[in-house]
Amino acid sequence: MADIAPILHVISPLRHVSPFDVNMALDAGYTTIVPYPDVRLDEMTDLTQDMMFSRPPSHAARTGLFIGGKDAGLALDMADKAASALFPPFQISIFVDPAGSFTTAAAMIAEVEKKLKTTRPDGLSGAKVQVYGATGVVGGIAAVIAAQAGAHVTLVSHREIEAVEAKAREFKTRFNVTLGTAAARDDAEKRALLPDAEVALACGKAGVQILTREHLASAGKLLVAADVNAVPPSGIAGVEALDDGKSIGGDAVGIGALAIGHLKYRVQHELLKRMRGTDTPLVIGFEDAFSLARSLSL
Ligand SMILES: NC(=O)c1ccc[n+]([C@@H]2O[C@H](COP(=O)([O-])OP(=O)(O)OC[C@H]3O[C@@H](n4cnc5c(N)ncnc54)[C@H](OP(=O)(O)O)[C@@H]3O)[C@@H](O)[C@H]2O)c1
Image: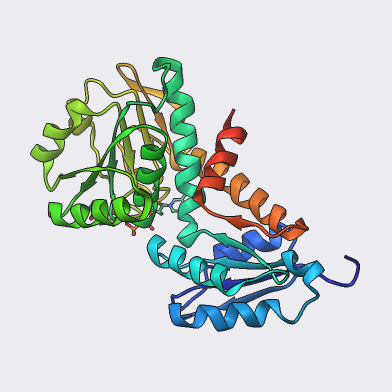
């Protein structure tokens, strides 16, 4: 492939393409990265076909399309539009990771599963998992990955329950997973929910502490608490950013945002490298991210 260099087209429905993703692409070896902000769903077919027709089909796989944004459903719809615009032999590669959520959620659940297995041999299978900040893009996909791995997942919102009920319906339709829902609007509602949790995932907005020590005091069955918020204070009291299995009392251990972030980085880096070097077209989603995160976290 001497004269045909890899190129990455980075598409976002938002006003800006994520600088994080541009940095990641450069660090994975791409030297040509083209940002397309503000892209609408109905523009995906034409844009994708413009990417694929200009290069010899034998080299098409190294034309990469990265889809960002901050909405998992929209990013997956954009990927579907792109995929259906392709036809042999013009097949480029596609990687979906809106706001880093697919690789972050994959890393979070892989780390949780690994820690959980030390005290719960079945791992996530049948485990009761509560996801706080569940209407966010990271929380939603973390819930889907955990449910697909066999967990009983409850989507928890700090707002009215209707917000997570709508998410649960959307995920049932899109991914065929059944998710429970709950509202935890105040301390009393959090204390009432937590006694049932074996795993608590804090996927809330940056800089917001969702679970305090007082809340955790009611979590008598808790085995793993994981937090993705790297902006102080941590999302779960007592779980610091670099913690990677530190005891937080009772049988529970904590996993912090930078421990998860380290694995997330490795997953995204490796997937971008695979896409840059491939000879066969790839379509990369959160299932691939989770499978890789599982193998890297061993
Ligand atoms: N460690 C890493 O590698 C990594 C990578 C990417 C992102 N992140 C972090 O992952 C977290 C989630 O990202 P995101 O993009 O999904 O975040 P987001 O959209 O800013 O917020 C996620 C959810 O947090 C909840 N929330 C908002 N304000 C709240 C408040 N005042 N109190 C309690 N909950 C509140 C909301 O869910 P409900 O309404 O359902 O409660 C919201 O949907 C962020 O902290 C982000 O910085 C970490």
